[in-house]
Image (cartoon, rainbow, N blue to C red; front, side):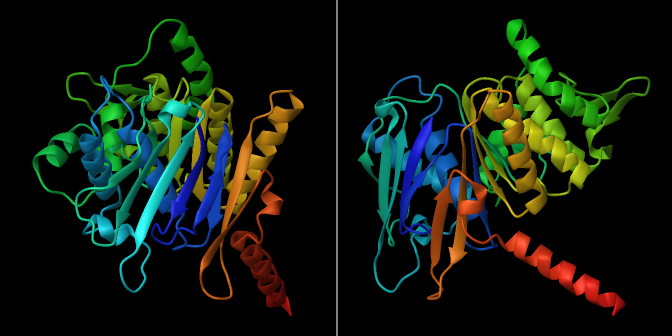
Length: 349
């Protein structure tokens, strides 16, 4: 589990320590304040530590951290991720894990190109890789995307490649399959069928009872997000303890489906997945609170943490964080919703 992270001079992200919950972590703020940058930085750092067969050397880590940050965030050079100021500046990222041997820290300066300084070397890797969902669905990119990405220079974020590769993994069997079925039930009800993969072609279909198989590109784009989530639950990537980073889950979903996705995210957190979400949606925020309250009433309280990014009078971004949504300062989505209601009521005057 990721307990905390320290950002120092990293893009637009405010300097300071972020304290995370073991369950659900939600970042709220206007565009351009650094929500997605936080998700991507945390994901890149954890991804480097996953899948170790043996502990890499410090030199290998210095190169790998730099490459992953660049491929995930797509700056022209690594130094472009340092907060923009006059002159040379130094950036630091520090992660504190529940298992101390997994702690990590890196630093790099404005003139950095392809290597970071590892100032806190992890002694132990992560058992499971983190999962990253961008705002766009990726299930229709299977199976052609991997070959294209690996053989050509493409300006796609490497989170896309990582997630597409996980989608093609085989489904779990045995006792884990039964656990997966419980999480899949509400997603499959929303989809109206089951997500299946043709093992020969790697293409995905929605198998609808009584109607046969529908090609995934013919499924509504919002529902393809449900298909991605369902697939990664069925493969076990989001079944055991692990990490899910999801940028704006509400994109292309109507309120009815947002309710389902919120409930599914909270259920994943209840299963031991540490979830990190960035969102603009007031509807999604309220659904999270409703779902968290429902779990607490069942004596299955889920740890949650909320983070508000705001612009101060000087124009700099600052962070407010708390265990309660109401304690992270003003929420732009709520304020604009109230203002719109006032404007709407004046139409009849």
